[in-house]
Image (cartoon, rainbow, N blue to C red; front, side, top):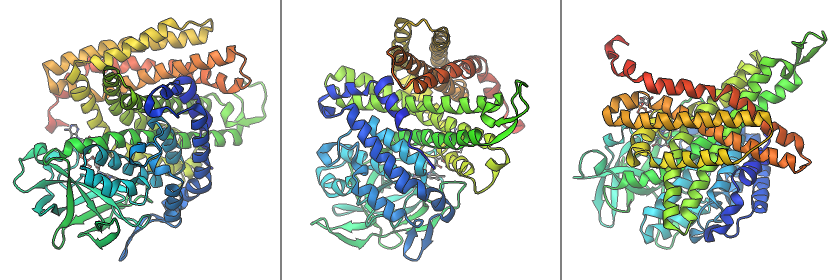
Length: 594
Ligand SMILES: Cc1cc2nc3c(=O)[nH]c(=O)nc-3n(C[C@H](O)[C@H](O)[C@H](O)COP(=O)(O)OP(=O)(O)OC[C@H]3O[C@@H](n4cnc5c(N)ncnc54)[C@H](O)[C@@H]3O)c2cc1C
């Protein structure tokens, strides 16, 4: 049974990030720690009463294509109705368009609970949130009025239609055609792998589709974005005819079986009616609004599933008794958690999940600051920081989520390997997170080629400067905490030097820089998570010094940070060495000899 990690989330929001400071921004004036507490408690109830109970059955049953369209597993449509009626779809959507206007950092914490409880279900609203944002920013007044209120209320969830058989990572190869027809367009083409491309959880679906208007330039400069509803929307807002689009088939997958992954056929007959969003040929730029939201969301999936895997493993290790303790003092068997190796595995899982949670929420809060700060210069700094962090959050959190799930299977031994176990489901469900929304390799290219290169490393330097100041000014008498801080400072220094190296490498040879982009991203992820873990430890130490009665909770934070410093941060030096010395063994390698 999944337990929403509300206390840990509140610790990150309140102590580690100081999210209460958001209330100083006019946009989030009604935000308060009490608001987070009550919203997370309500999300926890939804998770335990509705989402978690459908997780295993949903996976077993899967979604099916029938003559009536796609049927999601038993219980999913009712769960979605409750989800929408409780207002979750609009939680962090601006009040201007009918949302509840909560900061994204709170929305992200809620999303983590959803992903931990039932990731396949949560994918639907997670993608819809990005679609709403893209239409809000790029759509005309008419399109916003026609579609957004019903999308925000959850009545009409949104999807993202990019991928085609020849166009996965390479979106320049998109071929779906859009033919002008009066005030709209008619679309013809096939999209593949479309998450929730069809389903029975809502009366309409708003597809955001990338296509080329006839005569548009080749490549990414000729792609436009369209709203293509499953059902037509009449002038008075009521629903009309079915549009000329259908789900042709659904994919058999390794995990997230309840989430229908659809091949979508547009324009079998006269063409699917679609409405151009924004200007022609700027579709990819608009779709990036949706993709950035979704990339953060996929990082959150890594956190939620990592938390679920950790809970399964720690419960197992506390209740399964086996073999005498390694100390040899007593021959009586002890719970698995007493054995040093099992304890090491659990500490690695716990410290990893805690640190990616902190990183993900930190990035979300930078977006809140970017949207809410009145001072434009400060807002721009926050936005560049968020943009810098998004590929790291997406790739590092999902890689960690997978590692944690895999370690969880080890903790359970053969029982963890059985096909129907919860741990195996987590492992299978989390695997896709490294692939969709831009593979983790593509995230590393984005980090080095776009996010670092475009400002010469300025956003990264500004972040590292702040971290060093923060770590230097806070002092402590606790030797373990001092050691943790020193290890983090060392890792941050290594990240600074390696960033300069990557910039030089990019200027000298793009292939050489990209050959080590993934090790560089891992270096960023491990060092930045180390910093946030140390910050958590310092805030926990302050609570303990103030005599907080919940001392076990805070001592556990110190324990996690110490483990992270000893077992994860040393890897930073290895990643740095690979960035320094590893590029040419890739660049020089002859493809035919591999
Ligand atoms: C379950 C599921 C759900 C999905 N949902 C959606 C959805 O809702 N909407 C949608 O539009 N798409 C969706 N997708 C598609 C998904 O986004 C793509 O699968 C993904 O972007 C990768 O594209 P590809 O599969 O064609 O892999 P490829 O592009 O063929 O990549 C193969 C490998 O080569 C690497 N690679 C490719 N090009 C480069 C390069 N230039 N530099 C470095 N490495 C490179 C990749 O990192 C990867 O490791 C979904 C996919 C799955 C499996």
